[in-house]
Image 1 (cartoon, rainbow, N blue to C red):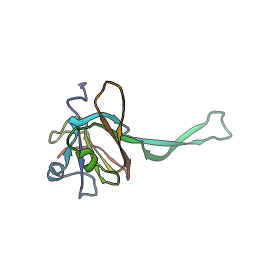
Image 2: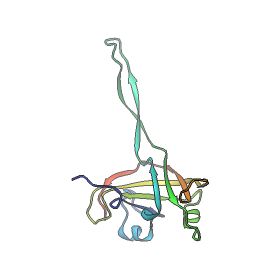
Image 3: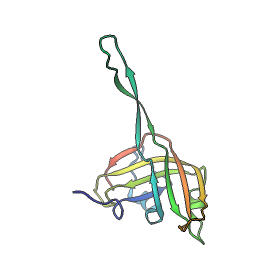
Length: 153
């Protein structure tokens, strides 16, 4: 059944996940921060492949095989708060942790949990004279292979 990500998908930042499988415990999720309601835009958060061309003398068609995987450039844009500075401090440059995206909702047993080991590489306010809410963009590097389509604990 089709669904709208807005209102369904949840995005958390977890400071730690003990399991090498990248599957967080309920306690680790509870210790994290649910940023869903503060997010204006989501960019990246996917795996990309760099195919390798494999031409041969038997054909003029150049076939390809799978090559190295890498993570897309990824960021979250947040609405800035006029009094609190949790985005600026909790997600300061150099912070490491995990972005957990519950694509089909944070319901126990639901599939669709993606876990990205990350480091914050930029935390920048956006300045504009346009008639819009103030925003902060946090750019992340994905440090190792993410877990895709896990089951929410």
